[in-house]
Structure formats: structure tokens, C-alpha cells
Length: 270
Image (cartoon, rainbow, N blue to C red; front, top):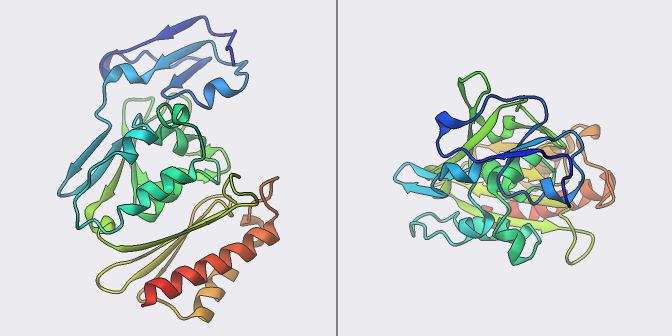
């Protein structure tokens, strides 16, 4: 999509060179959504790729992803062998159905900031206790859980001029056992339900529900629950929280989520 309202493109080479935000500005990273439809209110693009942020940092503390890390770069990461939850990364990358062109352009941060319920990077980061670092337009910084960053369909805590800098996932979360389930209405359709379960060495169990709900839902238990307990917890999700669009009705999403969650519970209870 040609953006014929754009009059200038700025490519800062350092954070100090980021221009003051003004009406009509838009951040540009991968641009896979930005250039997919008209942006009549945008007149200037600020290209973040010029900042040269390292795509990923692997340390003893965990994994930190730059907001500009592409899906392809994330999928190629060589991670420590004791990070038993690491296979979730590949599974979530493949839940973003797209060509190699999309994978090499679309970014982790863009997936979070777009905040579509089916966003697989949201599911990955939420399930692994991800924390977002936000650079506020006023020069301050904010760190908050991914579960709080995403507020609803295409809604986040970001205000005009705010910028998502990175997402950090602790090593402790990456060392958990994990199970992944996904369902859609067609073989290559957008996720209608994406559910991830984790269990730590102490037995604590968590279930993260995305795609079928308007924003991520996390259910936590001190130990793997029995089927009835888990079903009650899922039934407590408010009626209006189940998402409704062409990729699935709320009733279907609720039913599929319950089935996928039970599969995960049984797998991680062993």
C-alpha cells in the first residue's frame, strides 16, 4: 500500500536523535501492518531500524528481545539447552502465518503493539512472564508485564509518542515445562484460540489464554488442577471477554479453549 500522505521519513541513528513527537507521526519498524492499509492521518515516519538495537540478548537472567527483532531472527536464536520452554518460540513464530517476506520484516514489538487477540508474540511473552520496557514521550521509562501492556483488541497502554523498547523474559520462566495448543477455523487461518501451559519445578501451573479472548488471560495454580477445577476457572472468564469476529464466535472459542486447556492440563500433570 502506497502511503501518499507521507511527506518525510526520519531515520535517527541514536536514541538522543529521536525527534519530538508531533501529530501525524508514526513509528516504523517492520511496517507489515503500517503498509497494509491506508494511513490517512500519518504524515511522517520515524524509522526505528536505524537505531541498531541488537535483536536479542541471551544472558543468565533470561532473554531480552528488542522491539525491532524480526520473527525470522527470533526463530533462529540458539538458546541454552536447559531452557525447556524454548520450543514455544518456534511454535509461536509459526502461529504467525506468513511468507518468508513477512517473517523477515514483521517484528516482535509490532505484534505486541498491534495488540490483535491472535498475536502469537503476545501469547509467547505473556506465557513466559514477559515484561515490556516502554520509553514514554515525556522522557521517562515504564516497565510493566505484557499481561498489563495489552488492554484489548488493538489497544495498549501506549500513548501518542510512547515507544516499546524491549521485551524481557526471565530464565526461570524459560526453564519451565511447557505445552502449546492452537486452533483455527481453517488450516491456514488466524488463530481462534491459542493456549499455553507451563509448570515449574516446584509444581506451580499456569495457563495463558490468548486469541479466543479480547486480551491475554492468565490462570495460576499452586499445582496442576484437576479437570473440574480448571473448567471452573475458565468458566469464570467474563462472558464479554470472549472475542467475536469472522475467525470464530464467542461460543466456539470458549468451547475450543476449554478442550485445549484440558489437553494441556493432562499433559503437564504427568
